[in-house]
Length: 129
Ligand SMILES: [Zn+2]
Image 1 (cartoon, helix red, strand yellow):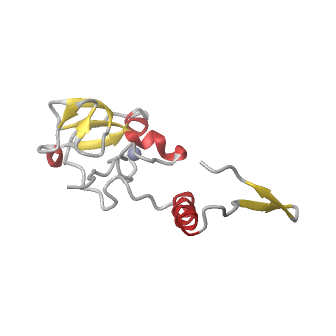
Image 2 (cartoon, protein in one colour):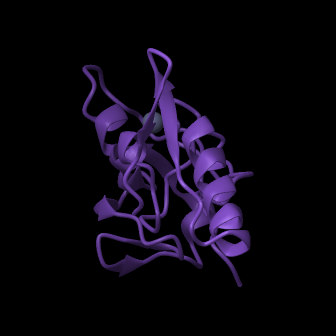
Image 3 (cartoon, helix red, strand yellow):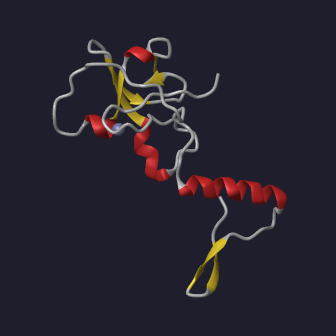
């Protein structure tokens, strides 16, 4: 079984797995899961474990929030569980991620390919990761 996740009830974005997460999304890995009785806080591992506690089997009965969304002012009352995420907490719809995929493909085809961008008409190399 691959990655799976749930949508944050604060912002509707998925709780993200930590693997290869783009920097600007790193905060979406820290989450809070609550079923009204138990509240668990911590990092999500992408496979149903929050803060070291495995809730894969019962996750569908929990409401999930990103830590940042949970910490916003206001009281949260558990009403209903989160939706399972369409993106499985892993497939990011960002330009940066698309570019990284393109890089990987290009590096496989042409290992010496240069990456960079034009700044004021000059080609500037970008470091390879
Ligand atoms: Zn959120």
